[in-house]
Image (cartoon, rainbow, N blue to C red; front, top):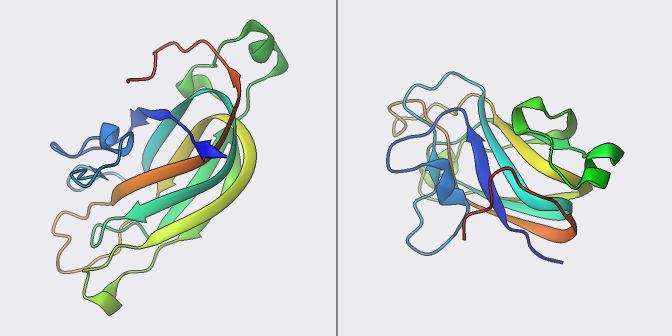
Length: 170
């Protein structure tokens, strides 16, 4: 298992200075992704992989006070025809399969200073991963009802490289 490369190919809402592309690389200077102010919920973030991947697990680090109440996960499987042709379906035309969801705590216990790290075991193949973030936890620090993800790490194996309509950024 290794860290899978991906790019954010869709973001229904993002704040200036904290775009979805912040999730593609994680360093000590990364600020992460945040939705725009007063977003229309649910907010969606779509990830595109280098090809067909088998995802083992995902680690997601939530913002300390811009916290979603729930995150739903969806996968897109390539059809046999698409695999034979070696191409991705378009993200917006993909056929989605709901994988499940997980909940995030409000973080009141830490007075909104700690970040919650969730590990999700997936063990499924996909070409895209869609995260759908439900409404935010309301708290005195989240003035604009935003949600945010500081880091996203997805482990697995690239099983079949496919031609990308948009190459992954280096």
